[in-house]
Image (tube, rainbow, N blue to C red; front, top):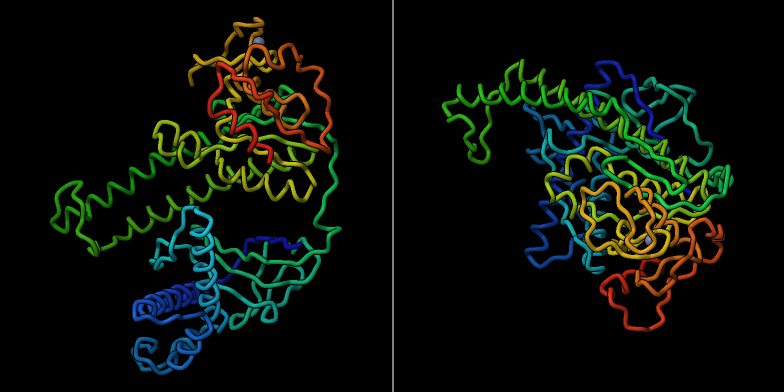
Length: 445
Ligand SMILES: [Zn+2]
């Protein structure tokens, strides 16, 4: 099993300088490889990572574009892993592209990396660095202080040095023994979790988890700092003779003032801080959920579709749904928690969790509603969580029709999950039947 530990670095200014150059090298080599790949493809060739690397190695110390102004090959100053890895990454990116294409998923071709726009990182192979407590010895620059020791014991596979805002990190990949990978659960409940905008998560045991408050404060600050930066950008445009708010022609480079550079840096730091608050929150939440439950049911939120709705977009990306989802997935593996994803058409909010009646008239703004069939009062989110929980138990509600499964009290749900019984239909025509039928079945497959 493979785990990655990302540790903050405390490099000296000279080391930072090397990091920046190594990242720049990795980026330029990637772009060279991608351009070459595309060119050879267009010419009818079938390039691969190995052949491209060979081709690159043949020219990297002689070709004018890889020499500095004094005619020295500057690649010699950068450790070779930084300019060898992009080839492997590129091959992986193409593999992923074709795999996604084959599966009918949305596929993205590898793209050129742009300075300042892409993630800055470079790779170091496992035999090129050594760890000693809170220091890491990297090729070319020697020992760099780390903020903590590597937490995992096992075979070290490699490391990636990367930058976020003005901080540097090393992510160390470790192959750990199973005993270290798998974690013990502290309790074995079965719960549905409704992820929301009002409350970040509502658990079917009645607990409501709010998103962290510092996030809200930071977001306010974000608006202010973005305004500061855009003001400087507008000033630069004006100085260059452009209209206010004018779209610049492609490739225009405005001169960057010192104040604009500082402003960009503070904004980047704030973005990083917001991301940290979010990550801290989702990590704690997802660990807790997986640690305490033997089965969890979540909704398959169509995050991308929801992000297209502008009003929702802000609230959703603030909570970090995508991150929450992927963390749940890998932690569920570590804790042996059965993670069930309800189909996105499963009407978890609309069904009455007590009798199964379906509230067709429910709107997004209804926080509370009353079941017209059994008279139960529902909190929107809790009711949804309870309906999700049913998918993990034997009392899953089939499509809400007044006759089927009526009267099953939620209190009697047996907490058994070794077998998860799919929802069955009795084949009858039901009046409310629509896409949920299909959805119900695939939700559990
Ligand atoms: Zn009801």
